[in-house]
Image (cartoon, rainbow, N blue to C red; front, side):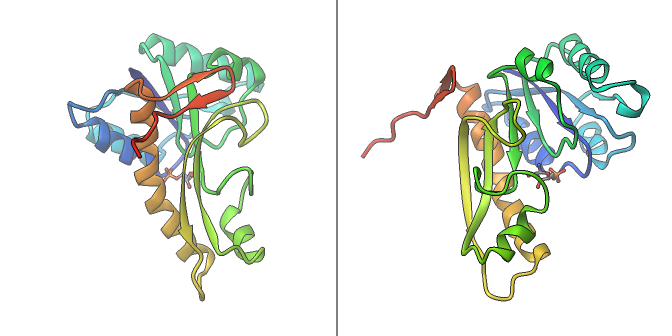
Length: 203
Ligand code: GRF
């Protein structure tokens, strides 16, 4: 499966995907890393892994539609069949979501449907949650919604700060995202409409 990864920043989840994909047994190949932010740290991670990069600066576009169309064009020119959003900090248009329907996943740093949006770790602390985590999900038009591929939970520990909790969740993200992509790319898991089916696990 030919995968494009969209980023805006540091790209630690991208790194986890690159590391997984560097194994020849991994069923997905990352063929393009695209950033909307020039100079995003993740671009260098891709270059170090020998993966082609592109930058499409949203500020160069009049509106979301023309930006999203340019992104789709670049992805398709690179042969991308499946998109992973990895810290891509742009809302995408309905047209973009429909174009990549059931061919685009995102990682979100909370146990959805709890805490869509930003500041998830602080909100989990403020609510007194004892468990927190991350979710990989197919992308739908409503932000941070869509069929769930996988989740990983971590404890919220006494004395946690936003940053200590974020760090614990991030480690879980780095394990979860490659595993979810592997499940999809291998064909072990599949999506029809809004129903995502995982392989049956033996008892
Ligand atoms: C991660 O916490 C991810 O869940 C969220 O944005 C952050 C991106 O971090 N969507 P990185 O760029 O992958 O390091």
